[in-house]
Length: 292
Length: 148
Image 1: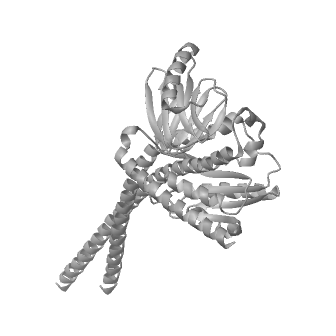
Image 2: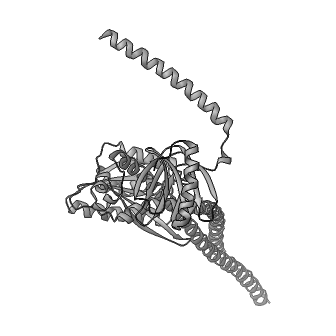
């Protein structure tokens, strides 16, 4: 009997464990679902704001296309900006930017050119910190909580221009938004003052003096940073939405499995108890008959 | 092309519009701020912009140029004859070789978004501050000169 009780106690403990796990998984699923709702709302706003930002950003890049400006080979000092954010649980957003940055840095270092990194958002700094900490020029924090504005882009551009690092070329790596379920990590160049001024195709533009060109260049830097921020945040919110959706589905599966296990265990306990009762009753009956 | 004064500009605009009716060339015009798109590849006859080197009236076949905007009024004369006014704070203007125009403004609003009273009050405050600064500059200059 004590042996039976031992087994029964073990089963009851397992049942309690399962109940606990079930409860916590259900709670987590609620949290994940609410995170998904929040991400969906933020995504809707980000996508809305992306539309004019795209026209604006593409308008800023038109000059580079029309004038067909290419980076000359002897340019030495490069600046690489990686756009991510401070917030986690958004899939491979930060990692894909960091991965591309790593390969770019490697390419430039092999070619003997000097390259410094700028991180917009803590996450990319976190990923690259161990291997590239001495190449970080500056990192921008508090990214991702509120939608980016042109003011933010201006602050970043100003900081880069006054950083003391006289870069020849700038490249910016960001996640371009394609659709709710897909984004693409891309790199856009921002040509420096010298490159543009010395490009032969620029001679068709009249009435340009150094001041105007510098003014336009600095403005363009802010414009392209703004554009990449807008694309990046839309990609991030949609990725977070997708990630939370998948996690919520996984949690549902877990809950189903746990519920099944719970029911099986419960039935096993009931069966054991019945067997006990029956075997106990059968024993009694046997003894009773033998006595007679 | 520089037009002297508002009257001159209006008169010249009328003439120019007549001329452009004969020219029959429209430009592809993109006008946007970071938060709003006003024109995207639209066909327009003429755009008047305020730049650091003066007020420009851009027509089709204008020579390619890059300009920096100063605060002022932008007038867009569309293909259908309508004229719309905007106020821009700053930004850049790019005129490309095949008659396409990109006007990127840091902030651009239609006149109905602006309050004349508030603008005048701000102007008075700014002028007072400028007067103060000038007095201080002159006083310090005189001091420095006297002590040399």
